[in-house]
Image (cartoon, rainbow, N blue to C red; front, side, top):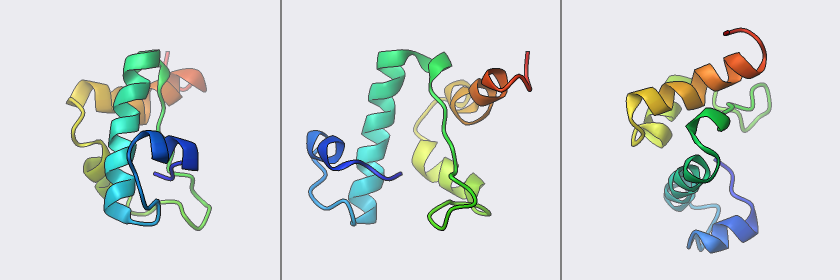
Length: 90
């Protein structure tokens, strides 16, 4: 996850280039977004095919960065919400 400078500062991330700080800040930010907007309104994207995308390691990244979420919430955030938004899931 790439945090914007103001978001990083609010989350206590001092060095956005430190992977551990960035991931931990991203986890806190995701919790905030789910609480703010509700689990049905948050989506995760891998940003493929950009150089900073996580494919082909998407499953490992999802487990590492989103593993703290309950399975039903994680499924909605990484799959079902986008599928519903784009009309792939009814």
